Length: 243
Length: 224
Image (cartoon, rainbow over the protein chains, first blue to last red):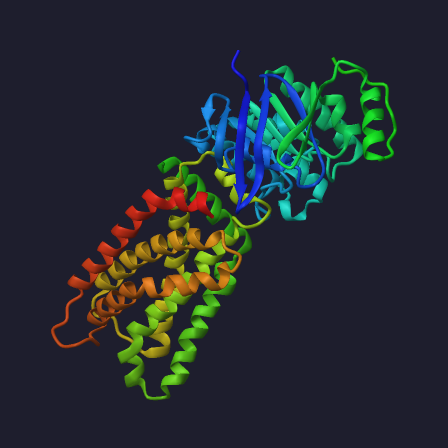
């Protein structure tokens, strides 16, 4: 089966700086991959490159069968990206933003109501302009766009940021459902306690390259304990198992 | 392409109807420009009538710069520019949609400014057809070239000051041809001058920049 993401010695520049310095990364269809690493390691650059937003200048890069070096924009309708910004128009309402994004991506509007309901964006909130929403609510709207679009590849950059505990749990459920429906997920995160329970595999980046890679077939608690030793970050160790 | 253009134009116009930036800020600005010109020309009506056509188009150009800046400011907030790129919309459709929304706003501004020229300057229209035709062709050209240069400046940090610097020299043909067409329509131009050739120039300008925008907008969008 062809890879959902295939990067071999891929190089991408932001100005003169190599954001990706010959990275090798293969992601199988239906896999959930968590990208870790310090600030500037290249996590966001990997996601932007996979979305066709960051030009690949060297090596090979094929995402969902599209050669990113030849035609980086061809893949865009098949990927959904949740970045640091929510990409919403302040003056439009919640439902207008979701409807525009879904129609722009060539999708049907059938799934919009279900997505909004699923994320708790119901009643008057749907008609509220986005400018009036909190950061967490904006994040939910952006997630509703992804749900309604049903992309084949989800690119999530710190998706847990600004979300409360309930929304984080909901995000986890939404990601699990999308994978169950055949989507592939790349998730960049600084929060192992939130992201590792979702992961099939963890890849650590530094300097725009992969420096470590682990499959998660052991209890997440053990993985997180190892993470705690390397990062010295305190967190509650759970007892969740990942297949 | 046309479906994408309608989608983008609808979105931009809906946002304008909500925010009313063009109606509440750009339109008063354009009217103030007309009034200030009237003050500068003094109480004598003759220079105002003689200069009415040119002053109308200068006010339209200033208003067009603001309308284009507003159009691209919408795509500068909260990652919406990347959102638009990621949507997979046809770049030619985005260009035509944004240009159509700018043109719709300019038409409203031109109606207000035309009323201002008649009220403040005492201009008399002899050929309404030429006035409307000049406005339609000039608006299409301004919206097209404005959207093109708006995209060019969009990725630059100093876009607010760069856009007028880039755009105003390029739209000199619209100022010239629009003014001469209006002078012919108002009867204030050189003797024997007709609007026809100037309308043709406006149409050619619009056609060139609409075609150019459809072809190169995608590259501008990606390079910013």
